[in-house]
Image (tube, rainbow, N blue to C red; front, side, top):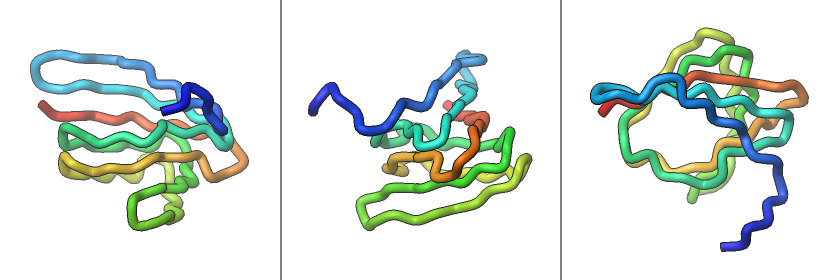
Length: 98
């Protein structure tokens, strides 16, 4: 895969990583993305801002607007690229359970 990216990268900051959980804060400028990845662990997301997600999946793209504090969870195995599809910075906390 090319080392060059069309989008700026989202910035992950690991806040805690122990035997039970890994907690990461993700910060996105407008247009920033995580890069395509597969979740090896189940996880919970806590939006710290309103988030205008552009989710790129094998089946196509979808847009999701999530309000600050609207917590959701996903099982292990999710494969996607998460993009800030809005015009403002966004951030969320991801809690992966081991």
